[in-house]
Image 1 (tube, rainbow, N blue to C red):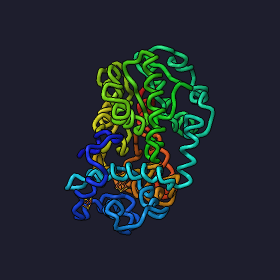
Image 2: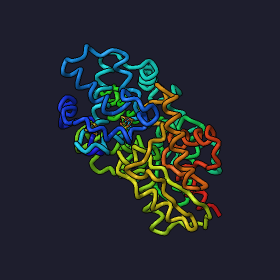
Image 3: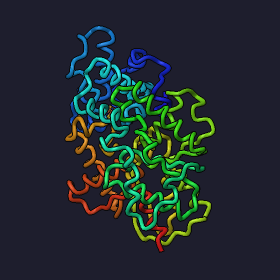
Image 4: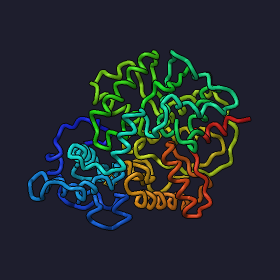
Length: 393
Ligand code: SF4
Ligand code: SF4
């Protein structure tokens, strides 16, 4: 079973899925949380065994300690990708989180996050109408501002909208769109959280309300394409929205990550790029690469920039090591999340690249912080920033 299949629906029950585990242990070598702890209870194999033991009545009813095993996980999908028996481990973990939420065993920090999203329609507990504050200090207002109908809708996502250090991602993409003459619109307050954080906190039904609203809002704008800069929004829109609402829910609407859109745009040759003498390495975000199936578009973008040298980390594409920012782990166990980020930035530094490029505002933030914590002289940038720099005269 591929990790790119819809995560809201499953062909096999959780119990069936666990029966396919032969306990070979291969998933241990790729699991970032196990690599940090070297503790079997932190491994994918142990998590699968725990679910099976409960399902078979070998263990008593789940408690908070049991529940924690499923939230100390990045949902990075490395285990599923590695498993020779085809066990969809990340699917088991996602669905078990749902069961834990149903039993009131959701960790407090994650419960609070769900409540914020229900009340404010975003993860930050800020007035949702403030989603376009990042557009205030651009040299000229983006042409997508206030547009009611457009070919393309740019779905900014909660982090890009509300976290000041991530404003540069939507600011860069909007400026690139304007330079290229793209007919795009920004949703502002009509954009609600994509639903992914709530889904991975086990609240599938509440996530469905957000999903239905977003699809309706995009349809009302007459858009043919939704472009996201956030890999989690992309993955959830593309793979889970149709599973949640029905296979034809997105009929006539193409979902693209910004790297796919930019790769096509740059290869058309309509945007002149200046030479950049820089050595970069690219970090594949889990939701975009391994789980979203987009690994080549970002590399096509980087190769389109004259003079830019792209070098690969040992673990790349489907084998990429998580940045530490996945699975809402930062809210639940920040020390584990930070240890994972620090390993990844050391892998980037080993390439001797001057800059680590990613295509995710979460990765950019976690890896930037990790570079500081490790005192490494490597810059961390989002791919939209690099493209904008290459466009500047
Ligand atoms: S790799 Fe697959 S079969 Fe092997 S222990 Fe992990 S989940 Fe089980
Ligand atoms: S999803 Fe990632 S962090 Fe979670 S068990 Fe699998 S490999 Fe480990």
